[in-house]
Length: 265
Image (cartoon, rainbow, N blue to C red; front, side):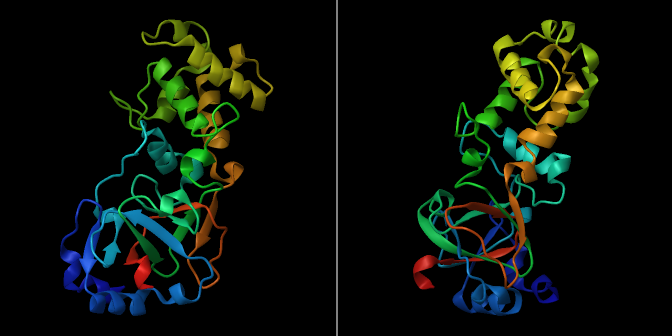
């Protein structure tokens, strides 16, 4: 990695943390940092705007991501919940997919994604993050919306850092044993149906009745069950020469990575 620190192309990035390379630059970086690419069995792809034939991307150098859907709560939770502490953060990552996944074909051009050797890669259990966090009522992001509507209904912001200080964790835990009773009724934007839906789902996973569930219980339910990577089936893999995973899956990594238009491979 010392060679990268002195290389001139790494002086300026666009908002995606991306730089356009010449073919010579691409080959030099690939030979130095991406030796596993020619050894792995699973190809990775990324659909994105056409920025040239050869690219370098480091999402930590770009802006924070925003979702193409109508909420960003999952970006915050997958980046800040303790259950995700050993995983690449979703709010600043390179998203791609294995062959046959929807996330590998977004945008104008399809690139093959070439991670640097030995970086961490998260593999979703299904084709997209939204399907991977679905539930029986809504297969497309059902648990994302369940948590979003619940937090909104009890007057909490859906971003991790709360307006006025604290986090989702500290704010929920502060509700204490009065969570289901007077605390809820005092909140100005309450939607009792959204609250009840969340508490009933919680009750399915615990011995507690809905009226016994505290704010801390709700936080633990989000961290340990609804958004827990292991219980939801997310894989954390190293990009080494043995890297292999299923087709049709979304992946993400904090990078860095190279990209090459797929027709050039």
